[in-house]
Length: 431
Image 1 (tube, helix red, strand yellow):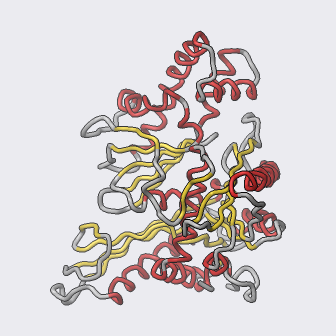
Image 2 (cartoon, helix red, strand yellow; image 1 turned 180 degrees about the vertical axis):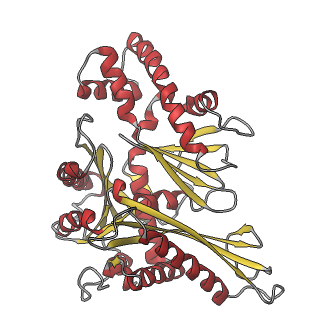
Image 3 (cartoon, rainbow, N blue to C red; image 1 turned 90 degrees about the vertical axis):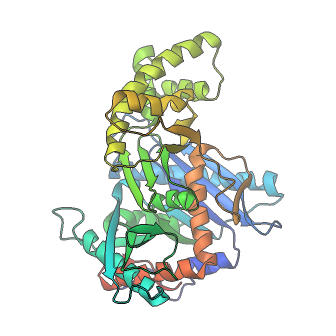
């Protein structure tokens, strides 16, 4: 399969390693978000502009027909972020690179595990052993993706969007890195992102029209980056029309599931209870989350959102139960929906409304960004929870541009995907 894009064009990550300003555009389920980052005197990437634009009235079906609205909102959000740069860093910053998220509804995460029996278990594991196990797991992911979407074997080829996660196991025990360990078996688990080529082609054309080098990324890459250096936990990303759950398990594996409910679910309750328009209900909900309502209105909103939380918790409990046993009791929240005051009551509501079993009641706390990366910082811009996944994507790109081992892992996956017949962007093959 011929790689997508011009082979003569410099790699996106190569340009990033030269410290050119770049932007992240996240086309969410209700809001388009954008960040502009530049390399500063602190020897780190800093966010010098952020934007967020709502593109839907939440009554329309979220599908391919909504893509033009999403792209228009993404352009507005990027323009907002650009206009913020003079006040935050003293000059206008024009991104030379733009990373755009693929539409989440079109993304498929393939996850496969491969195990190798070692003939000499007392011999330390070497790099070639680890690479062999990881390659087998990557190849298994490619094989799994061939059958997606079910029943559609014809049409344009699928596009490979990048590696998401890699976990290693020695004799069934998760390890940070297998090198130097001794054991009878060496296993590797890989997760890769794919999308329908026809579905993401409009995104590629839009990104190229921004007069900058572009790359397409899955949202899951940002979530995985935010979890990379953390202990076992569950990341809850509460979007406008969808809530995603990313589980970093105790054995180092990454699991993902979602429910088609988000902040607009609570907006509908407000609209129906108050007999007001959906847009007005959204404004009331935002004012409530920001503490701008009068005391009497706050009491009404508290009663209403807590009733809505019960139905929401039942759906969430089913989704979390599907992640398997051993769900950690440390939960981290991000996304615009997490600004609701009742959000802290979600774990208790799930325990009461479902059959989920926990050793103790989970603790839900806002995600903190200060302890995830030293190369990309959130300031001087003051980010909202809706921008945190975008910041995770920025850290993902910066890590690939700086970490040779991570770049080799991505290049290996891209090569396998290209040989398997998937469409692969040229920047992945030229790492």
